[in-house]
Amino acid sequence: MGDKHQPQHEHEHQHHLTPLTVYVKVFVGLIILTAITVGTSMFDFGIMNIVIALAIAIMKASLVILFFMQLKYDDLGNKVAFAASFGFLLIFILLTGSDLFFRHDPTPVQAQEQKAAGAGAVDQNKLRIATPELVNKGRDIFKVQCATCHGPEGKGNGVAAAALNPKPRDFTSGYWKFGGAPTRVFHTISTGSPGTAMASFAGLAVEDRYALAHYVRSLSPNHPDDTPEDLKAAGLTGEGKGGTAEKVQQEIPVEVAMEKMEEPDVVVIPETQEKNPSHPGAALFRNHCVQCHGLNGTGATTSPVGVNPPVMLMTRSFMAMAKASWATNETEFMKIVSQGTPGRGMPGFSDFTKQEWSALYSYVKGLTGP
Amino acid sequence: MARQLTGALMSDHSHVVEGTNHVIPHHFSSAWHEFDASKFGMWLFLVTEILLFGGLFVAYTIFRGMYPQTFHLAHEELNKTLGAVNTVVLLFSSLTMAVGVGYAQRNERKKSVLMLVVTLLCAITFLVVKYFEYSHKFHLGIFPAGFYKFEGIKDPRAGLFFSLYFMMTGLHGLHVLIGMILITWILMRTRRGDFTENYFTPVELTGLYWHLVDLIWIFLFPLLYLIG
Image: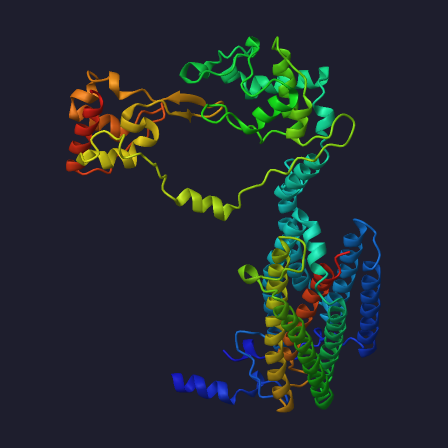
């Protein structure tokens, strides 16, 4: 047992004694490199600043590693271990960078800045004058954003128009609800038409909206110019002078949006008009159904269903449906209400107790008749 | 049987390194073997440290890449002079540490102790400077993560830069503190006569650790303080 494990004085292996003056020289080199890196940081070399800084840092690191840590005179094993760590770090950085820095969509900050720059540079005084380029641009945008409701030729006969009330505008009719002057049509596109399915398209760039305005006006036999009153209302000074820059679309802070989403939808119903307000099912109907099915189930509420593009569907009135299966069979009623109508916008409601189901069924049944 | 074994070990002085009371564990074939293995183990530990800080450096790279203006604006709040002072202090401490190890190698006990003391003083200086930097920031309302409330930087994401700053320099500062504890331990053992030119492994390994701490700062300084 003893002999094999006798520690030997291995004369082949000696600790490498670095002369202490070498350490001092290395230190001086490190200080010089530090001075250089501080010095170069005070000048603007653009992208080269970071390159220089990292190059110098790597040189300093090499001095520390090779001489202070004596890796220069060390075993291969230690060198490999160390090199491997930097190797893996390099892989980490390169692979991450290969994703991050080759993304083509602008990062959120850049997108916001682009938007702000765009909005600030807009001159509505120029845009309100129709040009063939704007009309063509408007035609292309119309196909994507508008044709679903207004129809491919702007006749108000789009695919979704069947379900809408009031019907989308037929631009070939010559009638303009809010005026047919460029700034007026722009305004209508920007703010939508309250009480109708015409939404606000303020999310489109200002130029895009003017392009659309000019296009739809080109479809109309009646396309008046901006009057001085129109210009005043739009805050524009007139031809040639720089227009007011449109305010950048304010974004709702996320916290506020989340708060709003948490609030239950409050539906205000004038109590005098509600049918059978004391019926046990009335409160249930009020809390769950009125938003879509309307006061007393008269319907006529539109909501978008689906995406790409969304279709506007409207709830029908219960009045005509006394003979429907769900108005005559409680089980059928429960089935439809609890499952909803997939593809047609009605969600499922299944959290009712037995009494609540009965009450609701009885109440809804009551709404199908006088 | 156990008694015999113990007796055999106690009387077998060839396992003890000359001039010290360090017993070479018998699974090593020689003093050199033990030194070699210990050093390799230390290097493996340093590899993990590099990967630890590496992760933070990658996070830095990502956010600086995404928000370069934020980083440029926010870093103006850092004091470059203090940063440079700390860099010089740490570089000097690396010198004294290396020389301290060199003296241990040459069995120059008193000189080794002196160098270790100077290294320790440099470390304390570093942490004192950091104390002033941090307290100035806290005074302004610059805190890490969600506690950030300084209004003076015209960039909503400035807090991001400072989260990285506090995390990276904080973790580094913790390593400086640990290094100080290790150096103090080595200092005491050197004064006690534990080491000779035949056995000074703990001094060597502590030296390696300390150089790594310096190495990390060599990268932290330009990346945080000198954003051009």
